[in-house]
Length: 283
Picture 1 (cartoon, rainbow, N blue to C red):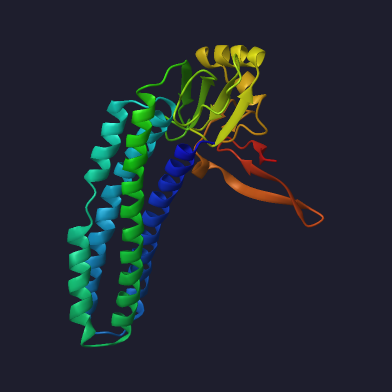
Picture 2: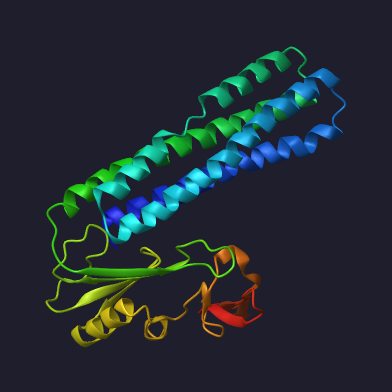
């Protein structure tokens, strides 16, 4: 895995986790609020402030989804159009008004020094820390995208890819496959240097397999024909593609995810797809 791919995957994970941390704190405050005996006006002001932040996070969700989807396409085929979409989406995210409102709330409750103030002060600190991590990850992603564009601009070689949509929610990038030749200077996926060989990349870098010359050609043919079966034969698991119903489903739609242990050691994990098929998703 290239350093650039490692960096961008880390930034993407950090972006998601920091947004989730903010949401957890908001939901926690709104859940605890009815149980407190603090003055009604203070509780109403707190509820209003955190509902404003909750609404902002609801509006942020599709922006993050767009960044994630565009980033996936950018990872497979780096280009200036996708890069610009990612950077514009990131630039459109601004927490300033919500953080200022929360700061004013903390200051107004400070004189009371009651349980509500303690709850809000702790949550506000957590939210500020998470927002800082979010901003750091966003800036880091922009830097990696710019670096990748510089490398891709002088690159060569053949790259073919396709994605399958989720059969339940119709998310258009549920499972993806990409094949890269060894003569490519792809900034993320060019891991094989032997002439005539290449790499199969699954889910935008989640899995990268080296391919010999013969298998490279058959894999490219499968991708061009959008034929999933020979691609799955190369993998230990095609999850989140269900091999029994030949459909793809986003990870959140799978149920009864169960790790299996053998004499105390991890063996594998099973899950059930939305159609009811029980398959091994990790070995």
